[in-house]
Amino acid sequence: MVDLSTNCAGIKSPNPFWLASAPPANSGGQVQRAFDAGWGGAVWKTLGVPIQNVSSRFGGVNIRGVQGAGFNNIELITDRPLETNFREIYETKKKYPKHAVIVSLMVETREEWKDIIKRSVDAGADGLELNFGCPHGMCERGMGSAVGQEPRVNQEITSWAVEYSTVPVLVKLTPNVSDIVPHGLAARRGGAHGVSLINTIKSIIGVDIDRFVPEPRVSGLSTNGGYCGAAVKPIALHMVAQLARSKDFGIPISGIGGVSNWRDAVEFILLGSTSVQVCTEVMLRGYRIVEDMIEGLEEYMRTHGFSTIDQMVGKAVPAYSEWGDLDLNYETVAKIDPQKCIGCHLCVTACHDGAHQCIHPQDSPAALSAIQKGHATKPNGGSHVRVPVVDESECVGCNLCQIVCPVSGCIEMTKVENGFSASTWNEHVKDGKALRPKKGAH
Ligand SMILES: Cc1cc2nc3c(=O)[nH]c(=O)nc-3n(C[C@H](O)[C@H](O)[C@H](O)COP(=O)(O)O)c2cc1C
Ligand code: SF4
Ligand code: SF4
Image 1 (cartoon, rainbow, N blue to C red):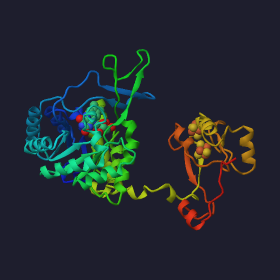
Image 2 (image 1 turned 45 degrees about the horizontal axis):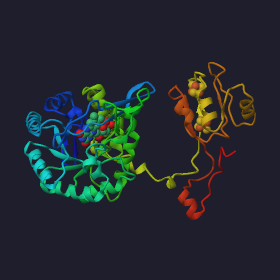
Image 3 (image 1 turned 135 degrees about the horizontal axis):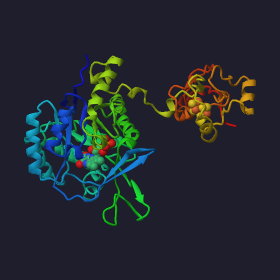
Image 4 (image 1 turned 180 degrees about the vertical axis):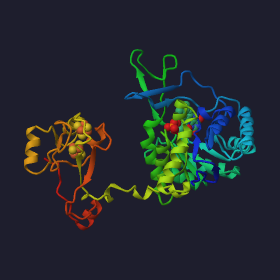
């Protein structure tokens, strides 16, 4: 029996899946429908002084046929009256006492922070999230990422919030910085109970090449917006992991950025997230995606022997290290399974033009020569003569052929027993430890 419940910085929810602060968490009706669908928590669309939004405001990129694989917005915070939001937060919390309702906030002065925090706590918020991440519109007014990019201001405003709040405070960080760690540490110094990241990445999603205007277009002009969706996951995972492994950090993380399915969520948890927030995928496919997320996470936990989320949090962090600590003597080569190969030769092209020119058509002179020298094996038992040949004496084990191969499990990267014991760059520099001869340096 697995237990999906989680406690992120003192905010409890029946599962780790939270709606991120964004349009899907804009109103009581929406958040309640999301809870009915299975979401464990919701971070309410950022409250502040209600503002005006523009039309249009979203943009999407189609990456190789996947609509909205990257997404961008120039929307600001809530444009609904604060009283309406607080009333709906109160009603939602009363109806769903076990679900987490976190209220995202962004205001300017100390007095405004004091007032809005009191009203959020009075409305029943289980936690607060300080939006120090919005990269457009609000930062020009000295809020959002303008705060998140300045550790001193981040720390100070966080300390006000912690002073005024009786519930846990999460600081939502901006990815629009060169190193996330000083910003996480600033939040921690300010007394934050946890952080959430990432907010959106400053971007221009595309250009209307007939009208000569970037997108999204507001009349004849556009502006930079915030990038998110599946395409940003690698950036978000890196930032989460950077904080999770920082020895001085040590407070909980709510992971956000490109989560589309249970597997993405597991990756965020293994790199240190105690809860996982989702925005774009819900905007594109609706609240019901959480059903698969719950089912997939449960199954993953069962098959990997985890009974609680806590057991998973940060499990992959110790394996995230510096380049200088990697074993330079570890060596792999590509092996093609002739039974699975369909002879498409995508690997041949990729290796020839993008790697080390060591996968060859079976009947080519290069293949025959490699086989003759004992550097390659003649494909045995394949269904056709188009199974290519890997010259292992030249293969540097870069993975490119495996990445382009359309058949799962057809190309495996296999360890070579080269007789060299492990040696890292740091050890090599310090003690002169031997490194194996370089391949592919012709
Ligand atoms: C249309 C839109 C509006 C957003 N509004 C807010 C907001 O009001 N406050 C906030 O903290 N983040 C806001 N975000 C950022 C998301 O909460 C989230 O951090 C980001 O989209 C990355 O997650 P994703 O890849 O799952 O979308 C917004 C994102 C989008 C797409
Ligand atoms: S792993 Fe890289 S170098 Fe080796 S065969 Fe594949 S693409 Fe070529
Ligand atoms: S890409 Fe895969 S399936 Fe295609 S030829 Fe290469 S090994 Fe065979």
